[in-house]
Image 1 (cartoon, rainbow, N blue to C red):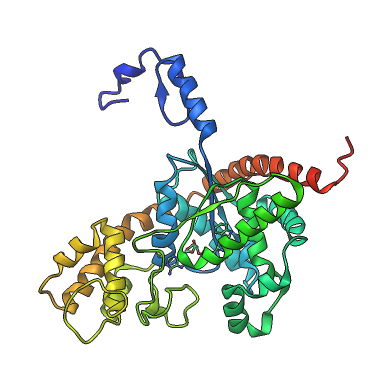
Image 2: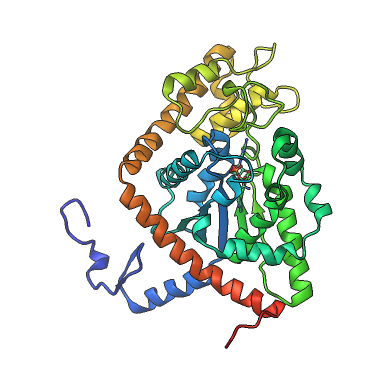
Length: 369
Ligand code: TYM
């Protein structure tokens, strides 16, 4: 409706409402249905294992909303993955709800996407069991993340930690996803997903779509720690100055950027090899302003690092403020979030069940029909 409360002219001969757009004639609507069914599917997930960082946002979450008009998007809160390292039950529950609210606050529209909690759809565990029978311990123990996490949690090297990428493959393959938007650190897991899909298809006949990664190309695929720009920004970093979370307040954000490690020169230039700290800040600035890196460099020509770091901090704080306000508003409406997850899980389960039935048939499980 326009500002006078009238329907736009083109909607007067209203034919149908697709959930997104009003269509005025039958052909147009049928075209829409065709386009919808021909659209490719896309899957991604984030673990509710602590605070979400601006690295998660830049590398993955901000792309989730961008892609929702082009693909059938399915996004999950990966709580099954989260318990591969120890979690406190009450905290995990809270983080799950908060991540769901954050997804929506970042622009992911539950009317356009399927949004759900991984443990609400049993097919993820069921497909994992089948894929386990074609996954080899050798390839799983070679995964960088498994090695890193085993070293970090030496007192809890469990089977789930090793099987993590098979569960991730199940997430993706259940939805026949053609595309998976993730940061660079997930590339190896994505390769394994492709290998498992191809291996299964070769053994049992065409079953799974072999997915591609959607990894930010120019920059942003690997946001680095503010305290040590040779390491990835991570929510599990012991040094809280290394990462900025999506819920940090303005003062905290400005303080962390003020302390960010740069170099001994005084030139704001994008050169990740020789100037990793400055380049990382430029990438963050670019991600939150949308300005190309060359233009971002120009904004700071002749300026000192103090001004540069303050400007990047202010840009991030300004960009996060509306997201934080929306997240808080959503968290105050738990029934709405519960409803979104419930509907999402039902939609996801329907799609997942279709793939799982096909898999069960191919491997020879008796259906009882
Ligand atoms: P998680 O929860 O560790 O991270 C969520 C997403 O954030 C990206 N990311 C980064 N991107 C840029 N710079 C960084 N410093 C940075 N840190 C994290 C990650 O690449 C990821 O895209 N295994 C996944 C969750 C998952 C999943 C899936 C993803 C479970 N099932 C299926 C895709 C498809 C993970 O641990 O993400």
